[in-house]
Image (cartoon, rainbow, N blue to C red):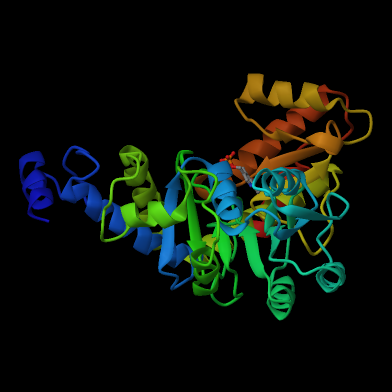
Length: 378
Ligand SMILES: *Cc1c(COP(=O)(O)O)cnc(C)c1O
């Protein structure tokens, strides 16, 4: 675009990210940015889905967009619950009039496809919902088998990838996922404010066959897609600055490459966990189903959760997550997401935690955690 080239000239710069002022939401420069964001989202979701865009709002808006557009009053919805966000999705399914079938799994464990199959045999379900990366527990849910079962029983596969997207593989087309939402502020590495979402052609057909209007005007994909499509039909004003932030975060992700990014997350998690284990801490999530971007460990015996988190924050400016719901006070959730998944973060955190735990009276051998992490990096 000529304006960008001229701006580089007046700024005397070669900077790639040189843009005119953001402009109104119907400005051609803004449109171009929106188009680029959509294309880059297809890359991260690994999909050819036409209906791929970021809705305005955080990840929760993504959850509601998925549920509210697919479910009509009386539809049966199978929600797999093994953490906090599954609970939330049960609430949403009921708010839009769905008939909820709830499949509970102990927190910290992955959902067993055999139990999903039983539920699908027992009821004519319209959609199966699972959380890919359970942020409250650190569990990574395998999706391929559940997706296959959903389709075998004529149901759509709906997945929350808020914490997985950009941090580990999310293969929408290969795994035949139908409705997949995410958020910008976790492993995509952008401020909070938009919710990427994608619908397969199979899901689009279901949306097209609705008999009732979507209960939310703001999140109604039949109108939202006309705003984001060629029509540019006014629906609401997109948060323009967020669209720019998202496009930039996605550009960085694209430049790094998806696979390199997954590997980076995996490596830093291995180093972190080696360090934590050297300190004598235990992983919380079921073995073989652990996330790299969110590392959950048990609070050791005799240690007060809040004291440790408080000291980390006050003395080292490091924030880690507590357990919530049934896990309150029992686990720590250590995020290594997006730009924060680095060796530096791992080393600084391990050193700080070691000092804090020692001050709290926990017996450990100073230096062992960092040494164990260093061994992983080789
Ligand atoms: C964070 C999160 C959400 C909600 O996203 P917000 O941006 O806080 O609205 C939904 N699902 C999962 C799995 C999450 O981790």
